[in-house]
Image (cartoon, rainbow, N blue to C red; front, side):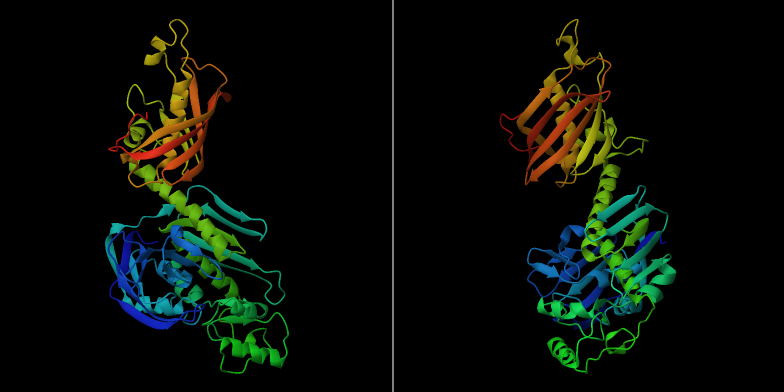
Amino acid sequence: MLELQRTIAQPVSMSGIGLHTGTSCTMTFKPAPENYGIRFVRTDLGGNPEIPATADNVVDVSRGTTIGIGEAKIHTVEHVLASVVGLQIDNIIIEINGIEPPVGDGSSLVFVELLLQAGFVQQDAPKDYLIIDQTVTYHNEENQIDIVALPLDKYRATVMVDYQNPALGSQHTGLFELEKEFVTEFAPARTFCFLSEVEELADQGLIKGGDIDNAVVIIDRNPNEEELAKLGQKLGIKEKVILGTNGILNNKELRFRNEPARHKLLDLLGDLALIGAPIKAQILAARPGHKANVEFAKQIRKLYQQKKLVKKYQFVKKEGIVFDTSAIERILPHRYPFLLVDKIIHLELDKKVIGVKSVTVNEPFFQGHFPGQPIMPGVLILEAMAQTGGILLLNSFANPEEKLVLFMQINNAKFRKQVSPGDQLFLEVELTNKKSKVVIMSGRAFVNETLVAEAEFMAAIVDRESNIGDKN
């Protein structure tokens, strides 16, 4: 796999109609600077709004992946994105003067050929690989969908499809080397659907730009000639529509024996581009679809964001530690004698954090609480939980080191056991609700797996320079 970022050498353009919207547009690929990423630009809208190709911006997954910010949207981006990541392009501007990229022949081949024509430029910055070092899983019981990412020092993908439909049967495929296999073995794989779906899709206002030249239609029912003629009229197909003898409408030939499975892998590559970084992992997917792909991409993207934040604050990697004391001081404003968390040992951004506070006899509060019988004040246990909870908000706001987390309310606080010198507090805090600049968290403190305190917190997030009044 490449070690340095790359973009394209020169702008290239193409025009055509979109698969689902049937609208015409021109799309232009342009070079982009280092660390720019993949961004779409709607040149037909005022201000030329940019839409970064990330899972955060996905707004719809019905029969394709749509990204958008506000009123600016772009439908069916997966085939374009597959061509970009398949060619290992890191930085590119994709200008489009319409709502959906051209469908081409229903595969990524037309985009790949255009990008190869543009050529590539190696940039100086290293690729920002997300290295999967733990198993990540997605499971949908209702649709029997499973997607798994396993640690691997390469990018590989394996897909199995089984629609429990005899017209298609079970298929599988695997991509093991992007450089050797993507362009010839997967980019040409066309989108497909079942004949029984076509009329329903048309009635939903989809596949307005679809025809038998840009989609493989698999025969799973036997309509008569009159029904086929009506279907052709509804889809605007000029040639006569016939039931093929090879199981494909109009006897269209498959490019590969397992072309549907290959196209599902192509879609998966495109949707996983929404992670926002190239990855090193083994991806295993059973019955994937756009909704599942995007949900999985969101999981991986959150892992990517967490790893970037950890690198930002934790300069030296330590086994079993996410943030040490020095890193915590880069994040939180608290200092001695009021910094009450020593390290973070577990972090799931926007979900859960576990911090550790080693309680020593040298704590200044033990001098007066109480002489001869030192007990950690309950309010300071709550404070330790609240400080630990502040770490959960790292990716919720830009520049978290410039923010303060201020108590608004503490509910259901309970103190179940005394905490004394020599105890080690494990502080578990979960985010239960987040609205704008107000968050609700639940916290529990343990000593040797014994619950010693618990509470619910409501807090406000303010700028450090703000007038904080009497809140403390």
